[in-house]
Image 1 (tube, rainbow over the protein chains, first blue to last red):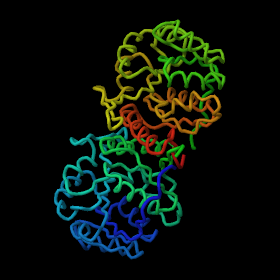
Image 2 (tube, rainbow over the protein chains, first blue to last red):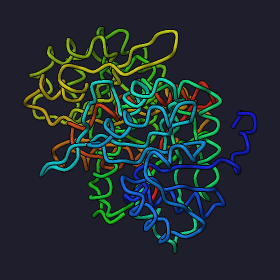
Image 3 (tube, rainbow over the protein chains, first blue to last red):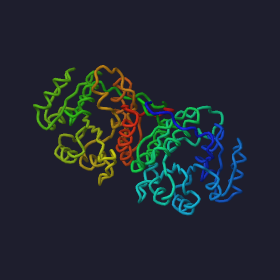
Image 4 (cartoon, rainbow over the protein chains, first blue to last red):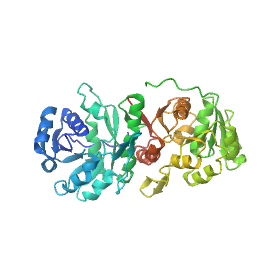
Length: 222
Length: 222
C-alpha cells in the first residue's frame, strides 16, 4: 500500500446502532475484543444492556439516542426496514460525528436475495441525506455475522471496503477496520458508488449457498 | 470447495467479440496461451486479423458474425456504447451458444467512474433480452486489462465471478476461467444480481487510483 499511516483510533468510543442484531452484535464483539470502547444501541436501553452484558469486554448498552450521544463514531447496523426512521430521529445526536453505514438493502424470494435500490441511490446516500451534519461513510458490508460472533475464530479473513467523501473520515474508518485481526480497511470510492458495494451481499449469499461457505472479499494487488 | 468437478472445456472454440479492445485482447491472449482455440471478432475482419497476428498462439481473426459462427462460447467484450447494437445484429449467429458478457456499463466525470443502470437492469440482462436463443452468462468483469496483456506476468491473481441461470453454462464458464493460471471461477448468482458485479468496477477504479494498483477480487472461505 502506498498510503501514509492511518490515524490512531484506539481512543474512540464506537457506537453500534442496531447492536442487538447479528451483524451489530458481531461487530461490537470484535471491536471490543480488539480493545475499543463500544456502546451498543437499541430501541430500548434494557435490550441493549442485555446484549452488552452477553458480549462482555466492557461493552455498554443504551437506547439509540444515548448510544449516539456517547460515541465518537457510530456504526449503523439496523435492518434496512428501520434505516430511514432510525436515522431521521437521531439527526441532532449524530451531528458532527462519523457515521458508518453498513446496511445492505436486499429483498428475498424463492430464488434467493436481490438488490433493492433506495430512492437516494443506496443506504449510505440515504444516511447522508438524512444526516447533513454528520460525516457519513459506508463500510463493513461483507462480513459474515456467523464468523463475527464465533468466539473460537481468531481472525476475520476479509477486506473492508470503505466509502465516503471525507478523507479524514474514511481514514478513521479504515483504521478501525484494521483493529480487528485479519481485517483490512480499503478505500473504495465515493458514496455514489455505494449501491453496488451494498448489494454485492446478494452475490455473497449465492456464493454461500453454492459452496456452503461464509464468503468474504479480498482486494488483490493492494 | 464442495462443488463436483467442472467439465473439460479444453476443446471449446472461444470467440471474443470486441477482441481488438484492451480487455478482449487481454482475454484472448490469456486463453490462447492456456491452450484454448480463440477467434477474435471485430467490426472488420482486417482489424481482427491484425490483432490476432499480434497475439500469436494460433489466435484467428474474423468479423463479429463469423467469429460468433465459428465459436462454441462467445465472450462479449465490446464497449458498453456498442453493446446493444452489436448483440442485436448477432442473434442468429449466437443462437444455441454460450454467451459470456463481461461488459461494465460505467460513466466517467471529474470525480471518476460511476455505475450506469441499463434499462434491463444490467448489461448481462440486456444481452439475455436481446439473445433469447442463447445461454447468457456474465463473468470476467474485474480483470485488469493491463495485467492481462503484460506477457511478463505469469499469473492473474483474481477470482472470476460467474453469473447465470443455467448451471451447465456457468459450470463451463467457471472451467474456462480456471484455465488461466491464478484465476478461479466462482458461481456468484443469477443474472438479476449482475448489475452490482458489473458496476463494482467503478470501485476498483477508485482503489486503483488511491493505491496505484491493478486491483482484482478474491472470495474468501471458498
